[in-house]
Length: 331
Picture 1 (cartoon, helix red, strand yellow):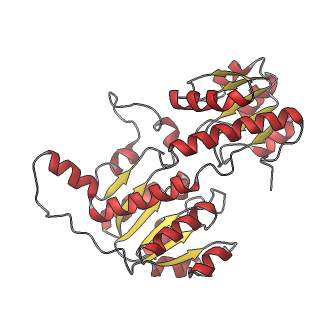
Picture 2 (cartoon, rainbow, N blue to C red; picture 1 turned 180 degrees about the horizontal axis):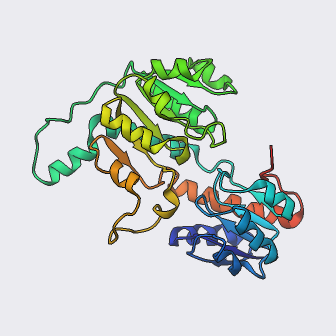
Picture 3 (tube, rainbow, N blue to C red; picture 1 turned 60 degrees about the vertical axis):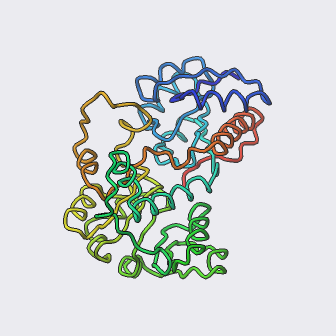
């Protein structure tokens, strides 16, 4: 089956070609992101593949359906970029990669926490400039700190295990409590208000839904401990960027670590080093010394790329054989 793969880099093509040795599909690769305009390129393809920042809204889906596309294989776990109602009405099936490497994201989360706490990103630059002063680099012991984990699915559960290994007190909030986390000694709280006020560090590992959009906002930030560390390696829109900037300016937010950003689709996965950034909020974030941002690379390990490619090809195979399991459907 001919399949058009949108939004690919060299590393995507390498891993997909390697996984395809077991399937031998005809894969055509595009660097372009999927948008209503580029969707016209899918004419003649029964299936396409899209990534986390591709546009799968109503307009794009309509163009894909008109072009003959019946199946979209997402190369990611999240599907908030998909208008599922329109996809269902158009008869387009959507499948995802439900788990590629939860360890990759969990370990990156701890990397952000450690780097922010010990100012490793600032120390690296200082030493390169032969400045060995320790002023402004004071950190704290993670041991004994209270860390809040919102969302204790596959990634969140691994994060809790790592944090417990550091000797942290782990508090969690999730609509569905994870028995594994409870057995390890994680303390679940009944409300987010209780969580906000207790923790020194807060890390997000929940999906983006209408209920969780801007979960971190001006109101929730004001309820947190002064100087709280906020970490988001989940979905950009969980955080109200302007509210966090205000919190950083006032000192209510003491540290901010992001691997995702609400308006990242026009920024991440591209080289903009010769351009003037037009996103004023993102540019403002870059001015703070206590902010560390990575460009949606938490998932980016060899194992994760291999798993994404393998599951994507398996989803294509399952679609052609009528036994698709990783489908994304309306609640």
